[in-house]
Structures are given as C-alpha cells and as structure tokens.
Image (cartoon, rainbow, N blue to C red; front, side, top):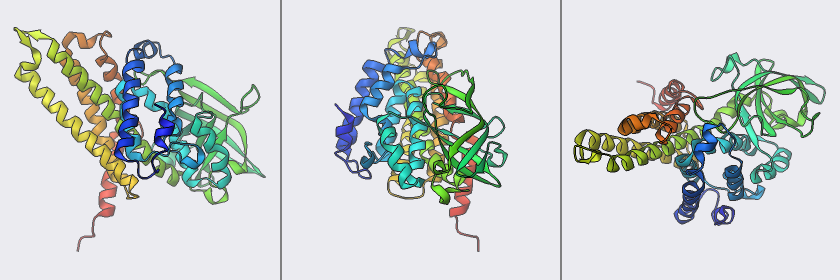
Length: 398
C-alpha cells in the first residue's frame, strides 16, 4: 500500500479512522517483516539503516505532517503520533530520523515566508532534502539565556559563529533550523548545506557522539566558524528577527508529542516481549505468567501502557482541534517516558538472566528508553512546563 495515496484521501485536520487504521496496518507489516528481524545488526554496529529509511521515504513519511499543497501526506497529529508509536515498536531510532526533520518543516510551514515555504517544503516532503533542528549547545539546553552561538548581520548576509551539540541527523540533513543569538534576541536561521567540497564553508562536524542507546542514526556536534548565509534565510524574514526561541517552543510541542509516542512504542515492545516470554518460560511446572508475582507485574505494565497511550492521544487531539496543548504534551511526555523506562526494566526482570544478554531485544529497549526521559526536555523540565501552564490557566485567588 502506498501511504502517499492513502494519506491524501483525508483532509489534513480530519483524517478519518479508516484511513488512519490503513496507514498503521501498513506500517505494522513493515515493522514486523523488515524492521524487527534486521534491527540487531544495524543497532549493534551503530550503522545507519539505509534500506529502512529508503522504505520510509517511499511511504512518504518525510512529508507526514507537511501539507498536501507542498507534496506531503498532510496527516493530522493524532495519526502522526500513531505512526511514531508503530515505528518505535520496531526500533525507536527510526522515529528519530523523521522527528527533527518534521520539527524543521513545521517551523518553516508555520513561521516561514512564502518563498521559504515554496522553496524548501516540497523537497522536504519527498525526503529529497532532509532537515534537522539545532538548539542545544555544550553549555545550554533548555536554558536559552546561556545560548552562545551568534549571528551577525553584514549587509545582505549573516555570519554564524558557535558550536551546537546533540544535533540528530546533523550530518545527513541539508537544511538546519538553527537558533542563534542576534544581539540581545534569539532568531532562527535556515542553514542550507550545499553539496560539494566547497559547499559548506564554515561548517564542520566537530565530533560524533557515541551513545549507549538510540543508535543507528548520527548525533553530532557541529561547529560554525564564519559561515555566511543570505538574509532571506532568516526564518520569517524581517518579521522573524528575535522570534526564534518563541517559535522553537511552539515547534517543540510537536517534538514532545513525538517523543511521548516513541515512549509508548518502546513500552509496547517491552510489554509484548514480557508477555510472550512469561507464557513460554516455565518454573515449578507451569509458565511464569501463572505465578502471581509475574501476573501482577504484567497487569501493572499493561495498565500504565494504556494510560500512556491515552495521554498521548489526548495531547495530539488537542493540537488537531487547535487547542492549547503545552501542558498536555508535557504531561504525556513526562508520564509516557518514565513508563517506558519502567516497563523496559520490568521486561528485563521478567526475562531473568536472559534479559541481560544481547540475544533478546529487551536489553536494547532498556538502553533506548532513557532517551525519552532526556530528549526534548528532561522530566524535570516537563514538570516546569506543566506547573507553569497550570498556574497560567488557574483563576487568580480571590
């Protein structure tokens, strides 16, 4: 089934349940037939899964949330969250391939000029050009006040200087949505990396970051040393000056739903592995699933997984309905990510000694799960987001 044709049967804000189910069924077959049997050889060697990514591009997933007018699928966020969950059930790293790409695309779609949208989004929708999002630095993550990368205006050009860290897809992406300090403000620039040996003057990959999990795709540190780009690559044009951090926070709402959906996918995989093993492994003459200690653990796992999934879908629905969802996205990300880590450990414990070997996938789930606790704002940052939203929405005390 071609997801491009299926997705375009539905309106961007109103994908019906039948179309959404068809998309997920297609991805489920891809995950079961192509991803799960092959993930170990890519993950253990930290090798980029080119054939899997090519299939994702063929499905049209690089344009999942990009509007149809630019060649994308135009999926609503509810369906997109299900897509990410299903990919992560197979291998969480695959969701990372399109997350930062679609954050960059969303920034362009929501805040870019007409020229920026027309020039960049069609190639991003097909995956011909990949995007990434670059906010974090060695000494700053969620602390925007500590941002040191700077952009200086020089006539019709800008000069970028600084170092960015934790850039997922930074090496393969050709469009970088980069936040830099412009005087006392922060602005977002669209850095277009050109092909050829002289195309990226002033940009270098200063190091590849080796990770305990979330392997198979590049996470890099990028250095900018006098890189020049035209003024028309300031996101939003003149109106975008000083708006970078506010716009980035809006885009990260999608990123947090993405990470929360990833957590549900990883938790589902852990649940599946634990349930299957508990029915096969026998002790004292019966499957361990029939022992109350294991049965109660499975019941707790299933309950928390179900709650996580409902929270993610609620946050996605609010975004689709045009409602404010910063608090709900933060809650979903907080609860689902902590649940994924808990279920991954529970699955390993149910496997006993076998769970501590590389022969079973639970050890990979155990290594991948912490990424969701850290990525797109740690659990502690989510609590700040949630508490501030609560206070902002609360009626003043009389």
